Image (tube, rainbow, N blue to C red):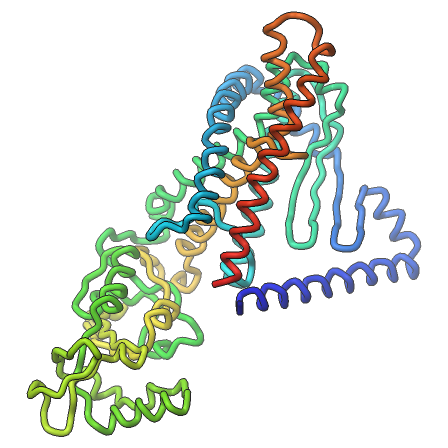
Length: 475
């Protein structure tokens, strides 16, 4: 439940910041009355836990862009409508499938839809990637609606941006009369445009992520079979042992050439931990640290001697007293003390000067993982090594793709107040129009059917969300 308390603490801190900001603005308005005129002139609305701004300055550029490529946009949004409608049953299936996984909990199968909670499953330094990805995905979504409505020679009122607590957002204000004067199929294209743009953004980000090695080639050398250190944690005990740009050749004689293989090398040690001959004084020190619940087990080892430890074969309980070890020592698994010994073979940035070095690391697998960041990129200029652009781009895409895809899925499904509600309504009117007669005569029946479907998907959505959050915080 530690994650839940961390999340609550973050919410409290953010709430206090909002309260402080709100009262500061009110105080400044009292002191400087002209500030209120400025806020009203630029259509800024500030309330507790929310700030929003509306503008018409983007209407002109979007309209010109739409008119300039009007024929292209017609094809674009025709494709978008078809793709969005194909996504609809898939999205509903994902919700049902995800709920089944959450309830049944089959082994080795993880839920497809996971909640994103800062401070719990999103690290603090990754919050900016999350924030920017949300902002871009929402803006691109609303841009789709705006371009589509202009391509039909209609118009929008304005575009708005807002921040509600920690969630950024955007919206396009389209007058209802303007929207409902459109043909049913054109109206459907407008409602599907946001979903289509999120799917397109997702595909574009995926292509860019896989083309990183080409895009970054002027600045970075990419190697498909070499891993370089691109970031070293300030809290790592290995901070003085490595430099940014060093190559990791092997870990416990396992040679990784990419991140996935690096993870597999670490997991291999966890699944099949090695045993070493430890002196009785080492073993006694480790036992004393466990009894005293001390986090300083590393003090029991002489790091100059770690590379000289003899490997042996221990029994299932992690110890052995056979003749494999010299007198005064026993065969012990480090895993018995929740530790592992990783022998890291690394090549310095300047191999002609330093060459290859074996560096021992005693600790948990998580501590090793958190010590440094690796990828297949090496800066062509030494002074650029600390920027680690590939890592930042990779992290950004890893947030942008699921967030944009998630917005598409949530907006295409029939959920109250989202695009899916209006997509469903328009589809029902299209089906009804095939029977002939005026739209108004089908409205009561369509309203009843729409309400049943909306309530069903709402229950499905709430079950997914509630169970997901419960299982996340229960870990």
